[in-house]
Image 1 (cartoon, rainbow, N blue to C red):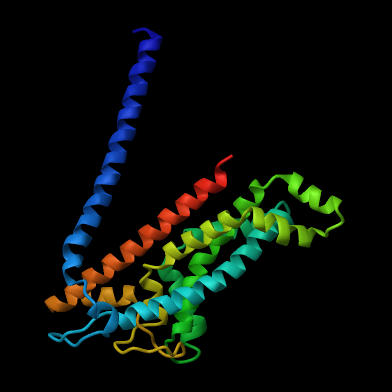
Image 2: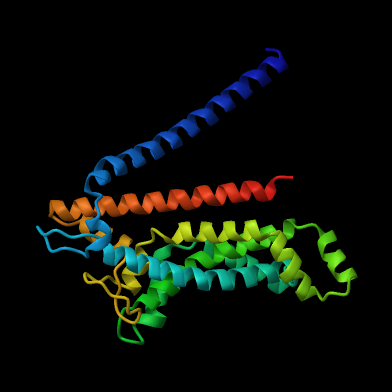
Length: 279
């Protein structure tokens, strides 16, 4: 067989396999989204956002779980953004090529793939067990530990992509290195930094395991972060395993809300990343 013909056949097989894998992935995604819409859209009403977790057979909603998720994700993201941007900036601008920098980068990459349940157990040992109680603050710290590596990696990549001419031009005008990074480099990489924050939020918004070890859950509305606090993932976990149809219906609604939020955040992040890499 001619070599050119063999290459064409091999290329056609490879392209076909790639296309088939893509169709399988898209089919699974469509099936998941369809299941969420079919099972969750019927239970979506105003009570979901205005009423708290009901007793079996009673009318209720997910207001306490939605509020708790917003509180813990917001605090967790503030912590993750502060730590992640500062750590990513140090890796990109100062010590990234030193042995210590390589060690930090390696550990950050390990944390990127660390099982969330291990993070939850770690926070349980340092913030829950010593203080003899679950809390919203512990849940927020666990979420921050999951999001911070994503923000760190994205920040380093975005800052590394900025041309050195920006740094040289700022320093040539007499500005210090720190001022150039804060006023020029961060501003130029602003869309990329926002993308990292959005991807970090998408990562933590549906996490269940770390919250079971830290915030536990609360069937009542509570804004006190020093006490156990409800969240959508833990409520879904509890309701989905129950024997009550109304609870399972609420679990589907909660899953639909999380899916919509994650898809929206990921879409925004992709759009911003595309704008960042556009010449």
